[in-house]
Image 1 (cartoon, rainbow, N blue to C red):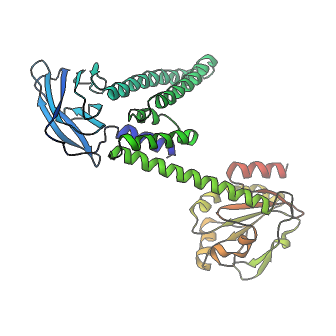
Image 2 (tube, rainbow, N blue to C red):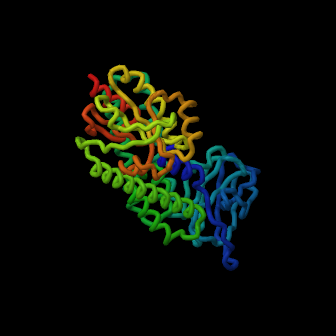
Length: 383
């Protein structure tokens, strides 16, 4: 699953999550509900603890579907009203607000009106906009599925997505500190808008610092920041590798031991186009990439491609076992020194799989090729 998908699903699925705090004093606030079709039903006011609804108060609605709940003064956070089933009305209340609401029993999540809570009004205003967007977007998707050549519909689809993304960002920036912005954040891409995710995290730390829901959002943003930093570090490391052995330079020679116990040097393959493939039996991404490498070898070995697999394994059995299991019929070497493999050190390898493509004269012509990129480069070389 992608990073955007994981955050969106968490926010949508747990939007009513809230921290359960003890009531302060004996003051109560009221929730006056008029629920069409709710006559004779028990209406619950809930907070969420450990992602589970916990009843705070309840009221039996009269025959006309009306009832009043007196709930304790709890801090600004997400709460909910429900009949104990999946149909749920999300409320975003602070400790001073008493509200009046109208809704239908079979669609609490889309209230007719909610008065007395500014944050709840903001929240459901955005929900309404999002529902209109989703409806039109799905309609366009259905239309384009049947009419792929409709350029006007495709243009409208692009414009719709662009406009709604801009609306979500504007909503967030217009209401700093309101937990309602989390509904909009679930519609944004952290890969493109990470600074905004951090900004919201920092602002909500001041308004709902003790909320379990905020804690979940904060932790996810922190992980995204760490992942972004790791990605930046990886990019910087790749830049160092590019400078260490630049394209066009002579590939450094090395000699290591084959599975049969003989010595083999890179220089021994001069005259061939050589793909130096750094891998290991314990490296799952390496093993997943092997079908692509095998396909490349089958296609281009008859035309002059040689592959030199350099294993970062620690034991010969693991190394040779993986060669046999995966059917890797090209040349292999290793010194069984794990990350201290001398060839890997020479080439500055810090992660695997990693590859270096060398031409017939021993010059580096490409690095870190995988899948389609490897196929495209070999097709270019052997055209």
